Image 1 (spheres, rainbow, N blue to C red):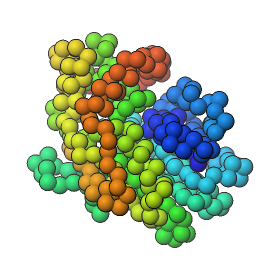
Image 2: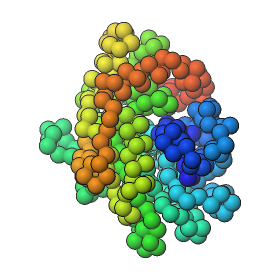
Image 3: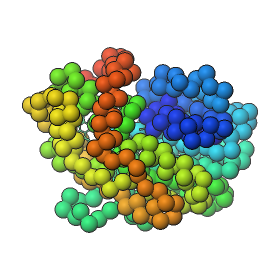
Image 4: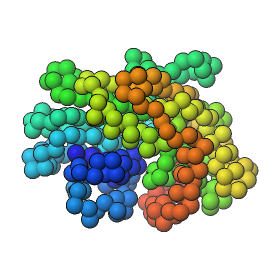
Length: 337
Ligand code: NAD
Ligand code: TYD
């Protein structure tokens, strides 16, 4: 199984999950190790005989073809992506290079060398957003794509390419669209780890706008389990929405983190809103439940405590990150906000 982007947040959790669940699988991780990729995350796998790591860019056709030729993967799960909305607003180009062109290179490699399954890890952000005053509305697999940010536009483009390669060339493709993930090893630029890190340092907690935007949070392991199930029993050409009906307002998450860490809410600082900020994401997971029997197992109360504890126990992992290049990003993104 070839796992691209496996040195990032969800990809690394997926590698751990799959290795636990299917210890007989040979896993190959391909990752460019951008700012978001961290080989230290995969420390526990590096010397494992069932695991191999190759540093490469999914948009590098020559490198990808060589890997397919020599490694002959049966299954590919594509996590590799530029994944942060704020960075996509600052510089869209790399999002198109990796998320769109990179996906195309992987799909072409599958056509050229053959594959049993190509799975595209997508996001609920391809559906755009929902209004706050219509709690009855949810994203289903039939909801039209309606993107807001360069990030979501690039992910939607990749999904459309996958559909096109499935229909035109008969490639065995599945797509999953998941809601916001949280858990261990998430890069500290994203809401939950950023607030944990700042709160621990008694730094301001920058909430965009009024903090009323709603996200549908899922513990990362539940996402991994859903992908594993899709690989085993999902139908080629199908899209599966993944989410656990766990909608939360940003401000409530930030307050919960303050409480859990014993920090005052006075650290909360309202800052200029994100441009084009999506109001609400909410997945209807009925299809994957009915078709594959998937249901999330981690309650948010447990998952968030486990996550906060993980960041407390693994300070070294994220402090190394925030003390490096990341400082420049933070200054650019939050300095004059
Ligand atoms: P991440 O930013 O933590 O990790 C991305 C990984 O991809 C990193 O290891 C990075 O080095 C690697 N990468 C980037 N460009 C590459 C390239 N050109 N070639 C090879 N590797 C490259 O992202 P994440 O949060 O783990 O997200 C993984 C996937 O899941 C993405 O496709 C994202 O769109 C999707 N997704 C994320 C969420 C979420 O809440 N984080 C929700 C739904 C879907
Ligand atoms: P994020 O973790 O970037 O995920 P996404 O934008 O893909 O949903 O952000 C989650 C929500 O938190 C989003 O509504 C933006 C908001 N947010 C803040 O209020 N402050 C911050 O510093 C960050 C990073 C996000």
